[in-house]
Amino acid sequence: MLALVVFILVLSRSMKEAGALEDLVDSVRNVFLDNRFTIAALPAMIGLMPVPGGALISAPMIEDLSDEAKLSPEDRTYLNYWYRHVWEYSYPLYPGLILASAIVEVELSTLTVYQFPLSLAAILGGAIFGLLGIEKHFRKRLNGHNLTEQIAKFFRGFWPVLLILFSLLAAPVVSKYINYEIQFLHVLVIVVPLFGISRLGLKKFLRVAYESLNIRLIGTIYAVLVFKDIIKVSGAVEELSTVFTEWSVPPILLFMVLPALIGYLNGITHAYVSVAFPLLLPFFGDPANLPEYLSRVQLAYSFGFIGVIFSPVHLCLVLSTKYFNADINGVFKRLIMPSVVLATVSLAIYFLT
Image (cartoon, rainbow, N blue to C red; front, side, top):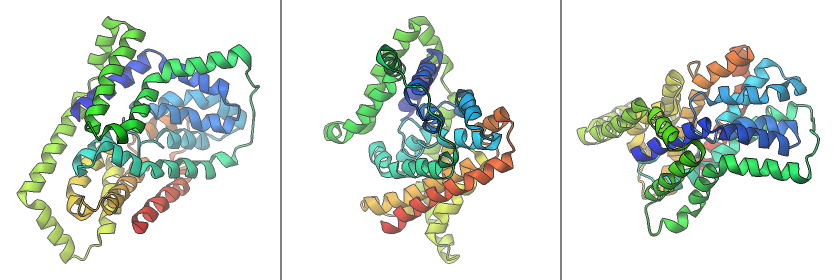
C-alpha cells in the first residue's frame, strides 16, 4: 500500500511537470461545446489526479467561462471546489480511499465499485444545485483536423490515467489469479516511469520522482496501520464498544458524527479515515456479510468527507475562495444542498442494505 501511494504521488507530479494537465484542459475546452459542461468537467478532470490544492489549478481554467456565464465569485468558487472532489469517494488513486481499504480489510477494487454511487450523487447534486442555474452558452464547433488534433492531445496527456482506469475495470477478471493491489502496483510500476521518462527525460524524471515523495504522508499511513493493530490487540476497542453501548449511542450516529467532526477539524480525507475508522471497526460488523459491512463503511466515509468539504482549513477551499475573492459564508451556503443530496444517497444505501 505504501508503494501504491509513492507511485501515485510520482505520477501526479510528473503529469503536472510534463504539461499533461494543460493538454487535458485545452482539449476539453475545445471539444465540448456547452459551457456548463466545461465548467464542471475541467475541475473534475483535475480531480482525477490527487494533486494537493488542485482546486487552484482548475480555478484559472474556468475563469473566462465563468465570465461568459456571469457567475458570482461565490458560484465560481463553489462549482470549482465541488467538482474538484467528486471522485474522491470512489477513485483508487486517492490515498484516503487506499487507506480506508487497508483499515477495513476490503479489496480496493471492491470498495471503489461499492462507493461509486457516492460520486454519481455528488455529480448530480452539483448539477441540480449549480449547473442548471447557468445560462446556456455554446462555443463554435471544431471540425476536421482541429477536432482530431484536440482528441489526440487529450489522449497524449491523459493516457496514464486511462490505462489505470482500464486496469480497474479488468480487476474483477484478473483478481481471480492475482491480488488487486499487486495488479494495480504492477500497472503503476510500468506506466509511471514510461510516461515520466518519455515526457521529461530520465534525469528530470528522477528529480521529479525524488521531489514528489511526501515523507510525512507516507509516514502517517504507516503509523495509522500500526495504530489500527495496536487498538485491535490492546482491547481498547472492546472497552469503547462497552462504553457506547452503556450510553445507548446508536451506531449510525457514530458513523455520521465521528468522521464528520474529525474531517471538519482537519480538512483532510486521510485524517478522518486514519482516526475514525480504526475506532469504528467493531461497529462496522462482520466482513463476511459484505453488503451490510460496506454500507456502514460508505456511510462513515461520505459523512467524513462532508465534514472535510465544510472545513475552513481545507486547502482547496481556502485557495479557491481567495483566487475568486469570494465570501466563504456564501460558498458554504451553496455547498449545503449538494451535500444533502450526497448524504441522502449514502443513508439510502445504508438503510436499503
